[in-house]
Amino acid sequence: MEESRIAQPIGTALDRFIKSNQDQFAFASGELSQLLRDIALASKVVNREVNKAGLIDIMGAMGSMNMGGDQQQKLDVLANIRFSRALMKGGEACALISEESESYLDLNNHGSYVIAIDPLDGSSNIDVNVSIGTIFSIYRRKSPPGTPIQQQDILQKGSEQVAAGYILYGSSTMLVYTTGYGVNGFTYEPTLGEYFLSHPNLRQPINGKIFSVNEGSYKSFSQSVRNYLHHCKDEGYTGRYIGSLVADFHRNLLKGGIYIYPSTAKDPNGKLRLMYECNALAFVAEQAGGKASDGKNRVLDIQPTSLHQRTPFYVGSRNMVEEAEKF
Ligand code: AHG
Ligand code: MN
Ligand code: MN
Image (tube, rainbow, N blue to C red; front, side, top):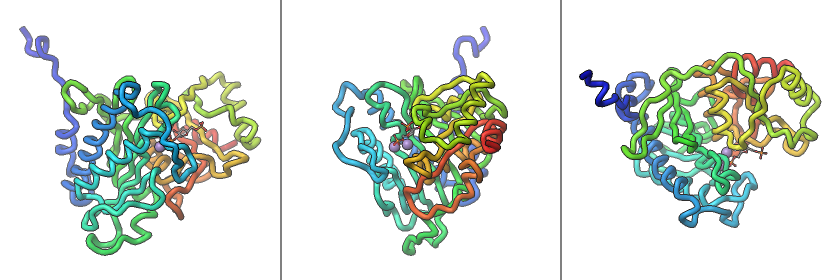
């Protein structure tokens, strides 16, 4: 009997994949690999908590607000603790920018990397059992390790990311990341406690038929955004909106589509944050053949001036984003 018929191969584990692709990292390769492993480990812990939500007391609001003025959920805070602890212990990161902290957190001053993270994306979906995520960006610090952290270490453009990705806690849990050499997706195997390569070299379809936007805000969109939405409907596109950026992005990455969070009358820069939401997904999108724009300019070229800065966001299939820009 053929061996593979009695024992299906389980594929490449994340750890092995990272190791065998170390030469793709520009700098001290072992450090970046360790960082990715730290993030993967923290995500397994968060995944465990997410799966138990409802059984243990982690649903609902903390009763506090974060920097963006959003109600902090218990799971936001818990995920923030899990990721910052893992990164602190790992020692490779010198600073952590997080949605949940007003200023950046000092980690190991001798570390060479700066991390930006949305520890829990889609908080409003936690209590209703809908997919949520984590988003991360990794930068190389500019000042020499061991010296005080400078503004130029923290406020880097998205184009300077050395790695970025997200974890999607969905019907299965996935980790998708890029180091600038394409995009690879890994699916978590809970009984083995490991991520396995399931989506090698992900490519986003150039064209798509899905548009994802919160149409409830229609009245506060500009006329040009409204016109584009009319166009989507005239073309018979499918409307899909989960309200968890990671989940909406991931679906459109696989199937082809566009995600839009435009400026609104209330928020001229939209809602999403450049440093720990948009940049990472923009990097992944571009690496998969897609595109990310603020409506006019490439998201990765925006010079951040503050940690919690917002930007309008159009991301997804290349032709769809270009078409939206024309409006
Ligand atoms: P977060 O939970 O990290 O605050 O992010 C929520 C974001 C994003 O995930 C989602 O796409 C968007 O908010 C939804 O906003 P609306 O409810 O305004 O559509
Ligand atoms: Mn978010
Ligand atoms: Mn969040």
